[in-house]
Image (cartoon, rainbow, N blue to C red; front, side):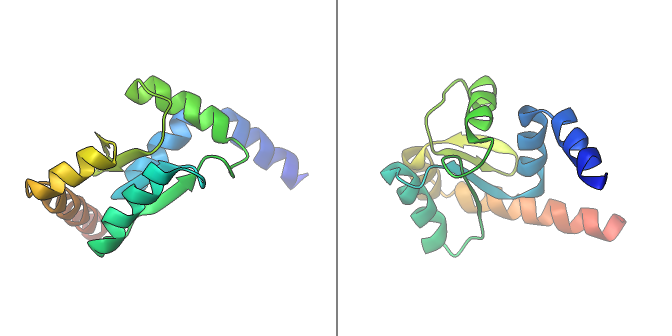
Length: 123
Protein backbone atom coordinates (compact mmCIF):
# COMPACT_ATOMS: atom_id res chain seq x y z
CA UNK A 1 0.00 0.00 0.00
CA UNK A 2 2.95 2.30 0.62
CA UNK A 3 3.73 2.18 -3.10
CA UNK A 4 0.39 3.68 -4.05
CA UNK A 5 0.94 6.52 -1.60
CA UNK A 6 4.38 7.32 -2.97
CA UNK A 7 3.11 7.23 -6.56
CA UNK A 8 0.28 9.56 -5.57
CA UNK A 9 2.77 11.91 -3.94
CA UNK A 10 4.97 11.84 -7.05
CA UNK A 11 2.05 12.60 -9.36
CA UNK A 12 1.00 15.53 -7.16
CA UNK A 13 4.36 17.23 -7.81
CA UNK A 14 4.60 18.71 -11.30
CA UNK A 15 7.82 18.46 -13.33
CA UNK A 16 8.15 22.24 -13.02
CA UNK A 17 7.99 22.03 -9.21
CA UNK A 18 10.44 19.13 -9.19
CA UNK A 19 12.88 21.07 -11.37
CA UNK A 20 12.63 24.16 -9.18
CA UNK A 21 13.33 22.04 -6.11
CA UNK A 22 16.35 20.37 -7.75
CA UNK A 23 17.67 23.78 -8.84
CA UNK A 24 17.34 25.21 -5.33
CA UNK A 25 19.12 22.16 -3.85
CA UNK A 26 22.19 22.41 -6.12
CA UNK A 27 24.63 25.26 -6.64
CA UNK A 28 25.42 24.05 -10.16
CA UNK A 29 22.92 22.01 -12.12
CA UNK A 30 23.20 20.94 -15.74
CA UNK A 31 20.23 19.49 -17.61
CA UNK A 32 21.89 17.38 -20.25
CA UNK A 33 21.59 14.47 -22.67
CA UNK A 34 24.20 11.74 -22.82
CA UNK A 35 24.75 12.11 -26.59
CA UNK A 36 25.07 15.92 -26.60
CA UNK A 37 28.53 17.33 -27.33
CA UNK A 38 27.59 20.79 -25.97
CA UNK A 39 26.52 19.09 -22.74
CA UNK A 40 29.91 17.39 -22.52
CA UNK A 41 31.53 20.81 -23.05
CA UNK A 42 29.44 22.31 -20.23
CA UNK A 43 30.36 19.52 -17.80
CA UNK A 44 34.04 19.89 -18.73
CA UNK A 45 34.04 23.59 -17.83
CA UNK A 46 32.92 22.84 -14.27
CA UNK A 47 35.08 19.71 -14.02
CA UNK A 48 38.19 21.65 -15.09
CA UNK A 49 37.42 24.34 -12.49
CA UNK A 50 37.01 21.62 -9.83
CA UNK A 51 33.44 22.76 -9.13
CA UNK A 52 30.91 20.19 -7.94
CA UNK A 53 27.88 20.01 -10.18
CA UNK A 54 24.80 17.87 -10.56
CA UNK A 55 23.74 16.53 -13.95
CA UNK A 56 20.24 15.50 -14.91
CA UNK A 57 20.50 13.38 -18.08
CA UNK A 58 17.10 13.96 -19.67
CA UNK A 59 17.44 11.09 -22.14
CA UNK A 60 17.78 8.50 -19.37
CA UNK A 61 15.26 9.90 -16.88
CA UNK A 62 11.80 8.37 -16.87
CA UNK A 63 10.21 11.85 -16.97
CA UNK A 64 12.92 13.47 -19.09
CA UNK A 65 10.59 14.74 -21.81
CA UNK A 66 8.25 16.33 -19.23
CA UNK A 67 11.30 17.94 -17.60
CA UNK A 68 12.37 19.26 -21.00
CA UNK A 69 8.88 20.73 -21.53
CA UNK A 70 9.07 22.40 -18.10
CA UNK A 71 12.55 23.77 -18.88
CA UNK A 72 11.12 25.26 -22.06
CA UNK A 73 8.51 27.09 -19.97
CA UNK A 74 11.23 28.33 -17.60
CA UNK A 75 13.93 29.32 -20.10
CA UNK A 76 12.22 29.72 -23.48
CA UNK A 77 14.22 26.92 -25.13
CA UNK A 78 14.04 23.11 -25.24
CA UNK A 79 17.67 22.59 -26.21
CA UNK A 80 20.28 21.22 -23.83
CA UNK A 81 22.34 21.88 -21.94
CA UNK A 82 20.33 24.10 -19.63
CA UNK A 83 22.83 25.35 -17.03
CA UNK A 84 21.79 26.81 -13.68
CA UNK A 85 24.20 28.38 -11.19
CA UNK A 86 22.99 29.70 -7.85
CA UNK A 87 19.36 29.13 -8.95
CA UNK A 88 19.86 31.28 -12.07
CA UNK A 89 19.74 30.07 -15.66
CA UNK A 90 23.07 31.18 -17.13
CA UNK A 91 22.71 29.86 -20.65
CA UNK A 92 24.80 27.56 -22.80
CA UNK A 93 28.44 26.43 -22.52
CA UNK A 94 29.57 29.45 -24.53
CA UNK A 95 27.79 31.74 -22.04
CA UNK A 96 29.31 29.79 -19.14
CA UNK A 97 32.78 30.06 -20.65
CA UNK A 98 32.29 33.81 -21.21
CA UNK A 99 31.18 34.28 -17.58
CA UNK A 100 34.30 32.46 -16.44
CA UNK A 101 36.58 34.57 -18.67
CA UNK A 102 34.91 37.72 -17.29
CA UNK A 103 35.56 36.49 -13.73
CA UNK A 104 31.83 36.19 -12.93
CA UNK A 105 31.28 32.42 -12.82
CA UNK A 106 33.25 31.53 -9.69
CA UNK A 107 31.72 34.36 -7.62
CA UNK A 108 28.23 33.08 -8.56
CA UNK A 109 29.16 29.57 -7.43
CA UNK A 110 30.78 30.81 -4.20
CA UNK A 111 27.71 32.99 -3.42
CA UNK A 112 25.61 29.85 -3.55
CA UNK A 113 27.89 27.87 -1.25
CA UNK A 114 27.94 30.76 1.24
CA UNK A 115 24.14 31.02 1.13
CA UNK A 116 23.77 27.26 1.70
CA UNK A 117 26.24 27.22 4.58
CA UNK A 118 24.36 30.08 6.28
CA UNK A 119 21.09 28.16 5.87
CA UNK A 120 22.61 25.10 7.55
CA UNK A 121 23.79 27.19 10.52
CA UNK A 122 20.32 28.70 10.98
CA UNK A 123 18.65 25.26 11.03
